[in-house]
Image (cartoon, rainbow, N blue to C red; front, side, top):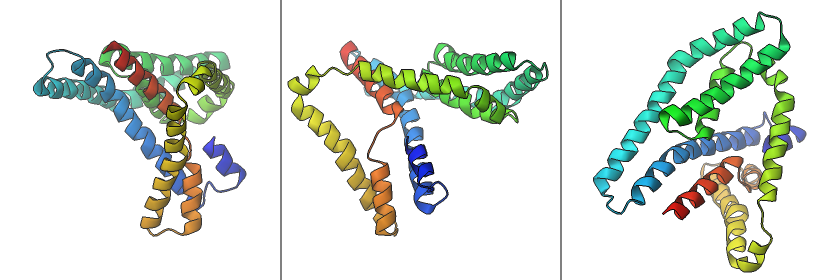
Length: 232
């Protein structure tokens, strides 16, 4: 949504647009690390006899498996997946090419969960990175654009259907506090940081307004955190 807003105002290639996009990328990378560590930390901390050494060993084991997955994607995936796409495209079948893109993306995401105990979101993230390495990435993006829009609609509709209006009545202060942290607190922090780095007030205000929201990873992280808390 932010990218579309910046495109409409022709700010993508401006300094303000580059800072906003870079900030979002850093947030996504930090969120990916959190998605990796949260399940392992929750499982160990929920154990009645968990110790600090067990926690560190468990986290190290989890990080090691994720690093192995990343190395596998970088070393092997960057060579094998573009070759598969190239061979599929050479058949001349657009339907087969689209099916191959979807199978690879979902297959990598599922393998991250089944084989490396990583999150599905992390697997999908690296699937997109590896697919982008192919010379046919633009064609893949174009062919799967209708599916992407359809999945985006389903995602936001499903999130909206999970909203319970009773929460506003039962926990009004909590709802107000969350909104204040996202809209006011996050924006104020961004404004101060951008000003500290010597940028103009106009740039700082643009970045501040741009970051007065949360991304889809935040919903995934909130769901995982809520599940871990219930299990404990």
